[in-house]
Amino acid sequence: MTARRRPALLVTLAVAALFPACAPKTVRTDTDPQVQVVLLPDPETGEVGKIVVSNEAGRTELSNAYSSTRVSMGAKPRARKMKATDVDDLFGEAIATLPPPPWHFTLFFRFDSEELTEESRKIVQDVLRSVKAQPAPEVIVVGHTDTTGSTSSNFELGMRRANAVRALLIKAGLSAAAIDARSKGETELLVQTANGVFEPKNRRVEITVR
Image (cartoon, rainbow, N blue to C red; front, side):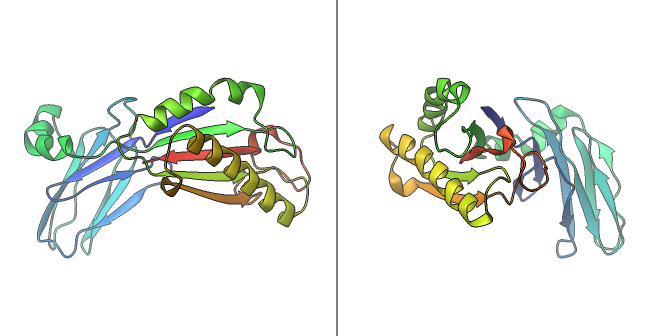
């Protein structure tokens, strides 16, 4: 099982949003006469993502903690470094009102089965406690498979795995209406393989808790 949060936080004078660090995001500011954008580290891990800020005059990339740019109409955005204390002064109240970033869990399964592996079974209660600790959780459960078997049978297997985890969450006291179960079958592999390959890390359910 893995548990992780989204690692990058972007704030502007008017907007706050979460972005993953895996790929740059683009923020266009042509409709606002002046906007300040700051990239913050994850409050728990310290990890930093990456964003691209652009307007008609040009673009700049922010990839370091507290890197910032102030954008005006007709002027190319230019990156600069802010002090953490200055960020707190400008955005402290807005940051304090943000909801916590989503949690992500991964549980692994035995081959051609909706039975959890021994390792994942041992930590199910930890996952359930984390989910139930959210004040009003919204949960997305997505089932995955490796590339053995047909595409249709793998979609069905992924759905059975997702529903098995959904049943565990409902049994633990979560509302069924708060849990969205889906299947991706073999279409989103954690480990890229050829067709017909046995890969334990692809036999999984991914859980997102908001």
